[in-house]
Length: 414
Ligand code: A2P
Picture 1 (cartoon, protein in one colour):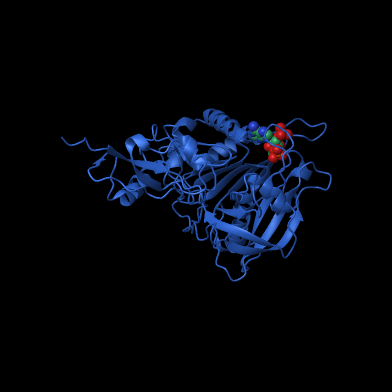
Picture 2 (cartoon, rainbow, N blue to C red; picture 1 turned 120 degrees about the vertical axis):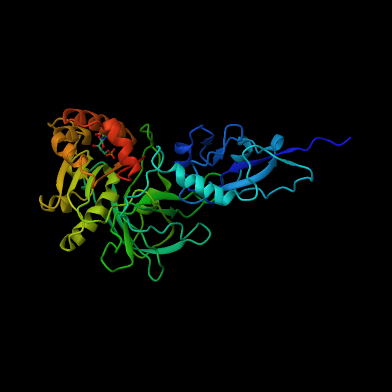
């Protein structure tokens, strides 16, 4: 009598060495199979249905990790949470049987095809604008980062402001590190964490246009807020933000990336940008606005409308340069929440106030919307869009999915 063959499961895993803990996979997974602790992102084999929705949005490819395992020996979550690297593929016995959903021989092609289809605007990540330039991603990884030199570190917030936000310029020397407006880069803080392991990568949006912080220089800039408390207001020193904010001119920084294939700007003439941000969420908006400013003479692009929220003018990064931009170049709306003697204003309040103009822009097929900043803002902005559309004979519930599918609605909140 022969024993029944063991069923082999193609187990979906996340490579902890490459993962930059950006949470994209956990947000994307439609069946809540992905979770994390302070150390690792992990996949529950009992929940994962191999839909591949998470594969394409992952900036690093760490999500695209698989091991063939006997179904009854799949790696449990508790074990994955302790990994520093993926285990090697175990040797499988002869006489095993391929389990449901497994396409053991040609999975990589299959994954690409399914993932591409799944991002075509059914929720998840929006495709980039049709006229966006080609983004390069993943040129440098944690085992071979690019080494940049700090060429500037300037405080953007007023001396008496409660937050320390900095404009940090990194020069890549002879290394090729091409970025587009809206992309992010990863910073590797030096030293070890509480577990004696190297710190994880931290992501920052690029604040300068594709041709450099200074045109024709091989440099870029970041907008970094020194983190001194956690989300609940308890004292906590952000590892990467404090490292970056303390950098001096001439210091070397290990950089990985670039990342991001979706939150990119259109390049065709007549394309409008509706930008909504709070605090350091202004980084990609600065990059896009500066790109448009440099290209204005060449006729690239259409209208620019910005909604920007901060506690006060002294807390608003780039307040000085922004307010010097001419009104015919950019329609600027600044919302301040903590100016003594003045009512609290959020970006969503100003969106409502400018409802008719915003609705006019939303009706134009050439309008691209970008949202970046505090997570809480997202709900407020969605409600404002719903209300202002209603007041102007538009239906946001119908427009939103259409804009997502057409790569015209991009959200990055944290
Ligand atoms: P608040 O004064 O209520 O904190 P921060 O300085 O913390 O980065 O925040 C940037 C701006 O975003 C502040 O003006 C802050 O106001 C505002 N803000 C906070 N929560 C929201 C929200 N849910 N929607 C829109 N703006 C918000």
